[in-house]
Figure (cartoon, rainbow, N blue to C red):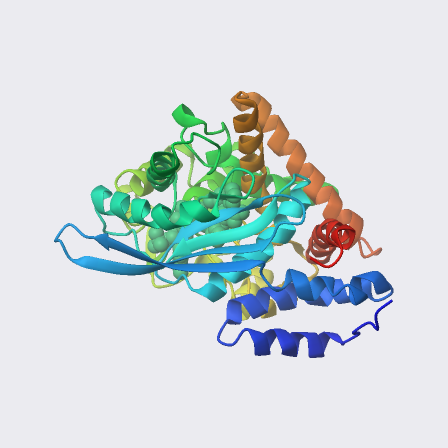
Length: 451
Ligand code: NDP
Ligand code: 2IT
């Protein structure tokens, strides 16, 4: 047997920092996972000597490419596109595509790394990947978005495939963008295959996929509360974001008898003390998906609601909090404000929305805290079911997929409890998710030898 390289956690992290200069989000995501994995593998020599964590934290492949397109004024625009293929030990690479001006290699590497653990947790055969571009869809015409998507896919198509890598949506990529990208893939390859998920119902999409991430995050919350003999009914919830995940999280909280007080976007947040009911949620969905408007318009439409510009909703007192916008949108001071105001549970619809310092605040206060890689896994899980339906050329109905999503989220919660129960009644869901997600990928990698 080779001499094992037993570096300690600090030395390991110093190496990660050194090899990934200027990539703070990626280093943050690895740090959060590494501290739990180090404790778990302390007495497991095989994981150390095979350098498993070091290998998972080094993407299989980082593809970067130029995306040129012409805007409506005939200016030639140039963006940078990426696909990060992090790890395919347990299945084809799988993960969303993000179009947002803040996209960098660091952001997509952190997302692809997280996705590897999340996809493992679902129990479905999916590896981890992520892609995107620093393209801002806001204010662009449909024709501009179409030309950008077509140009993006003209390079991406050669790196993906139904058994290789299956992208989906994320921030700035919804049904419209998936349609344009799928159309271009089909045109270039002359193949109709399940190469993207989140497709429209007319062309191979799955029932429940639009709802899956937001509903799943609420089901995860429901499972955490149930574990403590509690329920969502009668509780108030603060939600950030107003996109796909936020609106469906709001919908499911409302269905279960909770009261949603806030939604937000990058401009600010709205506070509606009367509660954001289904009718208002439908209005927000139409505002965001069809009229492509701003959340500030909510306060003009519904009396009693106020718009707070340039701020985030975490100072509003609530029982439940669901960050559903973006990474690092909830810092230490905001976590303290939530705890001081009596928050009981946090379920992350977004990926890594809470800073490392914020996570420590939640753990110290021993509130229920479901990290994104477990709580928002419902989206990619139903994407996995979309792949199965496409492969079999069948489609299951809404009710059946709803039941499957409920069961999947229950299963993920159960795995987190199995590895995260601290024995004193407190469940460390971060630890549970990290270890359960790691173990399956690591054991597959051990089976393959050095590849
Ligand atoms: P959408 O594009 O539908 O919505 C994103 C929302 O977040 C918008 O309200 C947007 O506001 C806000 N937002 C984005 N960036 C920022 C920012 N820098 N600061 C403040 N607000 C911001 O995306 P999704 O709802 O799909 O994604 C939300 C989160 O959920 C992301 O973290 C994503 O990775 C995660 N996620 C999504 C899944 C899915 O299935 N879609 C699955 C699992 C996780 P604005 O319009 O002003 O930009
Ligand atoms: O972060 C995520 O899990 C997603 N954006 C969804 C990925 C997918 O492949 O459905």
